[in-house]
Length: 440
Ligand code: ASP
Image (cartoon, rainbow, N blue to C red; front, top):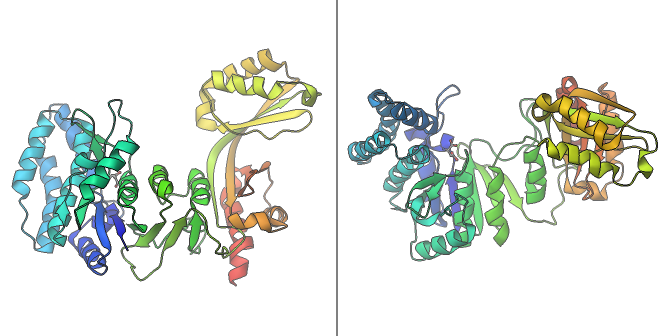
């Protein structure tokens, strides 16, 4: 058994949290490769070290004195080192960091120091080897992640290393400079290392006991999802459920390695397993529900449009020419609607209307704003009759007017469009129908 364990920022935010991480890693000898984040928030309005580093670097680039800012960051590590009672030379590390900041080594370099230093501290605490991610996570000269080279180099480098800490979030470019992934990117590093070492499982330790069926800010105490497929998770993440960085699925997917989301503060919980496929029946017809606000609908009426070949293409081309991506295109015999992000559309609405007139000569165009899209996702829906019916009646029962409905061809999801104002009531009603009722 071989496990890669990635710990998020809140799991490594203080010496107290680091001690929990130490206990988790030591409790299982198969946790051989540990990926760390930078120290995250210790309390709700705390600042992540990554953000402190960005600010400090920007101040340096603006010619300001950065001593106080460096001290603040150093203070975060000092607490960890002191609390864990380990010997660690922060003076030398921070002298180098300050020097590089003043020499303007780049914002990515700056941000990466959060993971780099935390990794060194954690390695010292665990007695593991520290391997710099700059050696094993590689980007090409255009700054794109080089998956195949990384996989080879990382596999080779770790072949004879039994226990190691590898910092998350960054790697290096061919010229040796540091490059980071987008925010939250330590999740990707965990996945990359899992693929390279062919781990049996990629454990992703965070501050929740797995993925929840619904947003806990909307539904009180929602159920945890026991098992979810990569595809279901992707649908839910796209619609706003945030557990893992979106790109973290791809490396492990190549090798079919499951991801286990676990809670550092409740290691006794099983968490959520994210898998390619499973014969395990889901606990409910739906695996999860998630949604996003801020969409609008561009509705185009034209008599007999259904017989006009190329109508849809011409409409979508107008959106393409205006640089707007579309989400859905519900259509009827004489109507065609395009659902888009309101923020992308707002500045261009009049250009789009004029463009549509030129392209398809419609009878009438009208816009509808402030819509929310809600996805109910579940591999169980394929074999369950009446899911759409239950969904409709749950929403009707909550007094919600459905503006649009779209069932994906994979039968993995049903998307409904409702007014922004009905968003929360809709999620609650859906949760109650498919999960809450069955729990009672
Ligand atoms: N520390 C980085 C961030 O705050 C990366 C990560 O935590 O995954 O985004």
